Image (cartoon, rainbow, N blue to C red; front, side, top):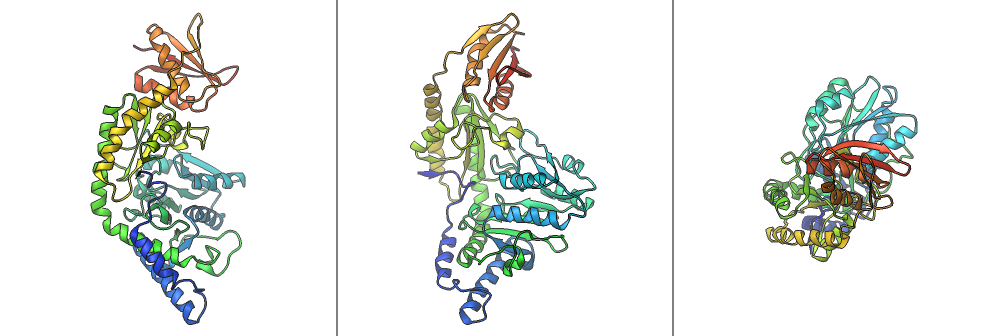
Amino acid sequence: MAYFDSASSAPLHPVARQALLASLDEGWADPARLYREGRRARMLLDAAREAAAEAVGCRADELVFTSSGTRAVHSGVAGVLAGRRRAGRHLIVSSVEHSSVLHAAEVHEAGGGTVTHVLVDRSGAVSAPSFAEALRPDTALACLQSANHEVGTEQPVAEVAAGCREAGVPLLVDAAQSLGWGRVDGDWSVLTGSAHKWGGPSGVGLLVVRKGVRFAAQGPADERESGRAAGFENIPAIVAAAASLRAVRAEAAAESVRLRELTERIRTRVPALVPDVEVVGHPERRLPGVVTFSCLYVDGETLLHELDRAGFSVSSGSSCTSSTLTPSHVLRAMGVLSEGNVRVSLPAGTAEEDVERFLAVLPGAVAAVREKLGAPAPAAVVREDALVVDALGKRCPIPVIELAKVIADVPVGGTVRVLSDDEAARLDIPAWCEMRGQEYVGEETAERGSAYVVRRVG
C-alpha cells in the first residue's frame, strides 16, 4: 500500500516513536509534584516546551499543550473573543478555514456575535486587501490558516497580519498543515498546531498566545498549562510531539524540494493522462506534498475505493463520498469542480516509484468508474425555448453526465435546463461550463430543487 493522505494524519515519525517509548518510563508522574519522579516529569515537559517554542518562534511561556489541534483552535478563538469582548464581538474568518475554526465561528454567532467570511479566488487564496476591508472598529479577532488543508494553497499570512496589527486586531493562525515545514511568517498574535499533522502522535495540540494579547480562558480551569488547557498532561506524547517537530524541521529543506517535484509531476501529467480533469489549488504558492484534482463524470466514493483496491490511500473533498452529502466547503468557496475529487498528500519519504505507479493506475481507475456509471440516458424533454434534463433524485456526478450527453443536441445559442435537487449541482454545473467553454446562465427556482440553465456556445 502507498499512503497518500498525510494531510489528514502523517505516519508516526521514527524519532517520535523512539521518544514516546523512552518517555513512557520517565514521564508518567505528576509534573506538579516536588518528589523525584515529579521533578523528572517536569524536566521532560519543560524541555519539550522549549523545543516546541523554538520551532514555532515564540517564548516558552507563550506556548501550552492541548489535547488536540481542534481543542487548541476552540480554546484560542473563545479565549481571545472573551478577552477582547469590550472591543467588540465581530469575528473574521476566511471561507476556506478548517472546520474547527468554522465551528467555533458558528458558536460565536449563535451566542450573538457577528462573523464575516472573507472570500477566496479560484486558487483558494485570500487577498490581503480584501481581508483588510473586512476589519471593523468592533472586530475582536481575525482567523486565517497558514495553508489550506484540502488544496495546499498557502495564504498571505504576513501581509494579513500586518494589516491586522495596524488595526489593532489580533490574528489567529491555524498552522496545522504548515508547521512541520517551517515557522509561520508575520506578526501574528495566536497560533495553533496539531502534532499528528507533522508525524507526532495524535492527541497533542499547540496553542501559542503572544504576550500582550488579551486572553480569558473559557470553561473550568486548573493549574495545568497556565490555566489554558485543563487536565493532566500526556507527557510521553508531548515529548514525542516536540521531538518529531524538531526532526521533521531538520529534514524539511531537502524533503520539500523532493516532494514538490513529485507533486508537480502529478499536477502536470494527470490532465494529460485522464480526460476531463481540473487540477485545483495554487500552482506555486502551495504546500510541497499536496496536489488536488477533480474528475468529471466520476463518483468520488467509488473512485476512492478503486484506488484503495489498487494499493493507494487518498482522500476526497467530493460531495459523493459517504461522509457528506454536500460538496467540500473549500471547493465550494473556490468555485471549482467538486465531483470525483482526489487529494493526494505525500508523506515524507514517499518513493518516486510509488508516484509513478499511481500515475499508471489512475487512468484505468477513472475509466472503470465512468464505465460503471454507464452514462445513463438522460430523461430529456423538449420545451419550446429549451431542452430540459430531469435529474431530480440523482446524485453527483449524474446531473453533469446527463447535461454532457445532451449538449450536442442543442443548437448553438440554445439552452438546457437541468433540474436537480443535488446540492453538488450548484457547484459542478458552472464548473463544467467553464471547463467546456459553455455559458452558465444561472440558477432558477423549480417546483422541486433548482433549474440550472446552460447556453450552448459552440
